[in-house]
Amino acid sequence: MLTAQHGSQTATTILLVEDDPALNHQLSSLLCSQHYHVTSLDCGEKALSVLSHHRFDLVLLDINLPNVDGFEILNAVRTQSKTPVIMLTAYGAEEHRIKGLRYGADDYISKPCNFEEVSLRIEAVLRRTQAVNHLSSSSRHLSHHEIVLDRQQHTVTVRSDEGEQDVVLTPIQFKLLWTLVQNSGQVQSKPYLYQAVLERDFSPYDRALDMHLSRIRKTLTNLGMSQDRIKTVHGKGYLVK
Image (cartoon, rainbow, N blue to C red):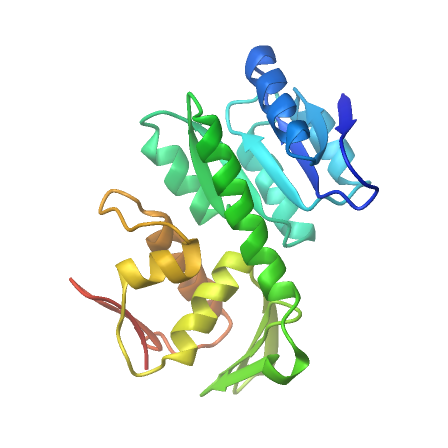
């Protein structure tokens, strides 16, 4: 395990899990040069152990790891926290990207990595997370029919005949749902949501938004939300009615 830090005691902490020695070193050096506090690992088992004792601001996670793969680690993160996770996937491995997003990853980066893209993706995910975490209490709650959103806790409460149930969403999923509920009754286009939520341009080959929305819908429907509360308007975008 390598831990490196440049900057102050309050530096943003990143856990990097990548078993390719050269890429691990390159990414660690890049992140340290940008004043992140980096914990670098090359093994999934070590990552699970470290995650059980330490919290990080972001996890940068390879999928193809020996013994314990990236999906198992992602599941472990999601069972205990809302820490943002960016997956490193092989170029063209669309099934891995979709599976990662479905399991709760916040974003993905294809390998071989463009290091400028790595920096920008990390900055965007951290910016979204921090924006949600530092909202004023006056704008903390938003209610719509059977769901109540709490921006400070990233929780959604679903009211049904069985009572109330809470679920914690990842920062990106929460921001997506909040944006849709805030504009309930109006179709929100995919290009707009990509800019407003994911902070990047829309591409018809990018399934990230679809996977986030699918996970939100499945999670809340299982808790008692109306199945037609979140609608896909084909060719246009998404609608909360």
